Length: 455
Image 1: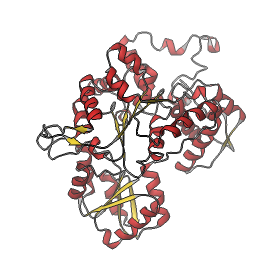
Image 2: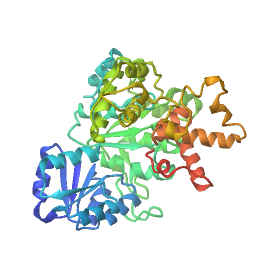
Image 3: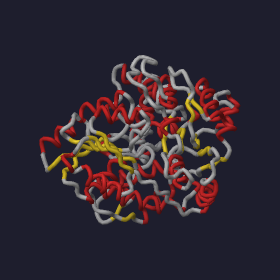
Image 4: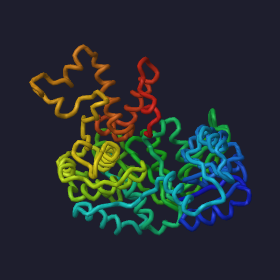
C-alpha cells in the first residue's frame, strides 16, 4: 500500500511513517496540499492520504474530486480534539486519527480505509486449475487477459499476478475503463499537458506513466471506445504514449493485464472490439469460473464474509445453520462472489440468536418485509391462493416506467454496484450510466444512495 503523508504532524511524522512502513506500506511525505496534488499529478500515486488536521482538509478533498483522484483521506492531529475531528469528517475525511501514533490504531485505520484484502480464497478443483495456471504465467512479461462473469474476482486475480511477478516491488495501477466517461478516458490513460482542454489546470501524468516499471490493469476493457482502442494498441506495441496536448512521445515500461466480463471474440465479430488489440492482449487467457461451477468454495467464502462483516459492524460472529448453508448452495449466484459477499453482509445484519438461519439469507428478489417488496414465495403465481403480486403491480405502468423500476430495483439488490447490476440486466455499464443520468435529471430520480454508489 502507498501512503502519502501531508504536513508536519507536529513532529510525529517520523513515528507515524515508521509504523506504516513496518506494516508494509510505502511511505512518502510532502509539506502541504499543493505539494500533494503536484506529486499525484506527476504520477507518484497513493492508496491513502494522511493529512495534518491543521491543514485545509476540505481543499484537499475538493481538489481530489475535481481532478478525479479517487483516494481516501484520513485526517490526524495531536490529542483527541473532538471539534477538529468533526470538522475533518465534515470536510470529507474518511477517518480522524489522534496522535501521538498508536501502532495498532494506525494498522486498523490503514486496513479499514484502504480495504485492501487481496487474499484469494478457494478450495474447489476448478478454481485450483485456474490458480495453477496463474502462478505459472505470473513471472513472465506476457500480457494476460482475465475473463469471467461480473463478480468472479478478476481484479483480485490481477493483483495476485502482480504480486507473483518480477515487477512486484513496483507499482500496480488499475483503471476502470467502464467507470470513466469516454471524453476523459484518454487523458486518464495517457495524461495531458496544461491547457490541453477546458479544466486542464496543470500537467497530469496518466496511468501509463504512473505504472511505468510495474503493472497496468485495464479493467473492463471491452467498454472502451473503438477510437481509443487504436491509440491503446499503438501504446502497447511501441511502449510509448502521447499525452493529450503533448508534442513528443513518452517512453513507458509496463506489463499489461486486462479484464472483461464479455466474450471478446464475439465482440470482435460484432465490430465492437479491434481484432489486432484482442490478439495483443490475449497472449494468455485466464478464465475465472463462475461461483456455480465451484460449489465447494461457497461454504468457505460464506464463513469468511460472515466473520468479516460481523467485525466491520461490531456484531458477534455467528456460524451458519445447516438450513442456511443449504439455501446458499442451492442458489444460482448470477452475481458470483460479489453477490455472495453482499448476501452475507445482509445476513450478518439480519441474523439473531446464536447462528445465521435461513430467514436471514435474502436471495434474488427477496428483501426484508419492511421494504414492502415481494419475497420469492409471495411472488409465485397462486401464492396464498391469490395472483402473482409482482406482476399485478406492473399493470397500468408504461414500458419506460417498468424499465426504470427494474433498473433501480436491480441496482438496489446489488447494493449500488453498477457493474454487477449491468451484468444482471444484460446491458453495458455505459447504457446503465446513461439511464441513471436520465433518471437523475428528470422527475422522480433515483435515491441519493444509488447516485453516489461506486460504478
